[in-house]
Length: 329
Ligand SMILES: Nc1ncnc2c1ncn2[C@@H]1O[C@H](COP(=O)(O)OP(=O)(O)OP(=O)(O)O)[C@@H](O)[C@H]1O
Ligand SMILES: [Mg+2]
Image 1: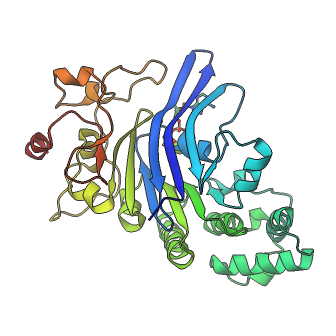
Image 2 (image 1 turned 90 degrees about the horizontal axis):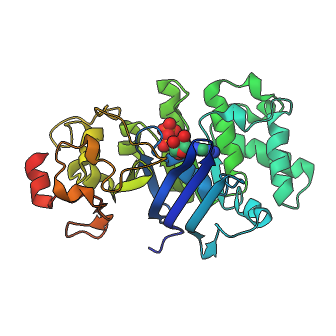
Image 3 (image 1 turned 45 degrees about the vertical axis):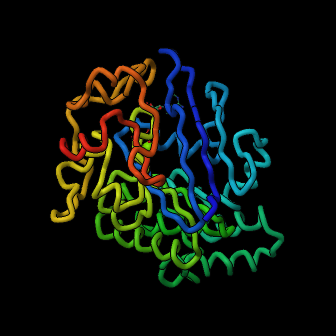
C-alpha cells in the first residue's frame, strides 16, 4: 500500500545560547493508511520534535527545518502557516500528554469542539453541538448530552484525554499523532484510552503515529516500530521483527533480555547504562558507540540506516554483521 505520509531526511535544529541543538538529524520513515507506527527511545532522542515538526509546530525563528514531509502528495515543510493550519486538524490531528494544555479552561467542552468544527465546516451552531455530542459518545463519555455543557476541570484526567481525542477526531483526520497520550493517566484508564485508539484505528482506518515509553503499549497497538536515538532512527521494523529479531544493540538494551518468543515481554523500556550524547556536538561515528559494548573500529564511521537482512522492511543503523548480532544478543 502506498504511504499516506512520507518523511524524508528530516532535520530540525534549534539555535540556543549554548550553540545549535541538532534535535532531529536525518529522520526518514513512512506511514501507510490504517497503520500504527510507534516511535520509541529515551528521553531527549527527538521523538516529540519529530512529531511536532510533521505538523509545523516547531516552526520558529530559532528553528531550522530541512528535508521533506509529504502528506498525500503535498509537501508540508514548505507550506505557508495558513495552508498548514488547514492540514492540521483536518487531515493530521495531534493529541498530547497533558490535555489541559490544549483545552481552554474557561469554555465549555461542547462549545470548544463545536467552535473547532465551525472554524472548518459550514454548519450551524446547533449542528456543530450535536456533532460534539456524537463525538463525545464515540470516545466513550457517558451521558454526552449533559457533559457537553461541562467545563474541562469537571472532567477526570482520563475523561479529559477522551475529550481531546474527540476534538482531534472532529474533522475526521486521516492521521492521528499521539505523543505519550496516556503517560499522565493511571494504569486502568491508560488501558481504556489505548483500547479506544485501537478501535478508532480499526473502525476508521485511522493511521496513528504513537509516541510512547511503554513497550506493553507498543506490543498491543503498533504495526511497526521506529526506534530513535540521539536524533537518529537506529531501527525501523515490523512489530514482531522488532521484538523477536532486533538488530541494533540499542534496541537490545531497550528490550532488556526479553527479545525471545519464550519469555514474557517487558512492560517498560529497560534502563541502559550511560547517557545519550549531547545534541550540541554529537559524535561523528555511530552515536551509540560510546555506550555500546559491541563497538569496534568501524563504529568511528557513521553507519547508514539500511536493510541488512533479506528484508526490505527491517532497517537498522549498525555495522555489526547480522550473524554477529545473533551470536551477541
Ligand atoms: N525549542 C527548542 N529549543 C531548543 N532545544 C529544543 C527545543 N525543543 C526540543 N529541544 C531539544 O531537542 C531534543 C529532543 O527533544 P524531544 O522533546 O524531541 O525529545 P523526546 O524524545 O520527545 O523526549 P521525551 O521522551 O522526554 O519526551 C532535546 O535535547 C531537547 O532539549
Ligand atoms: Mg517527548
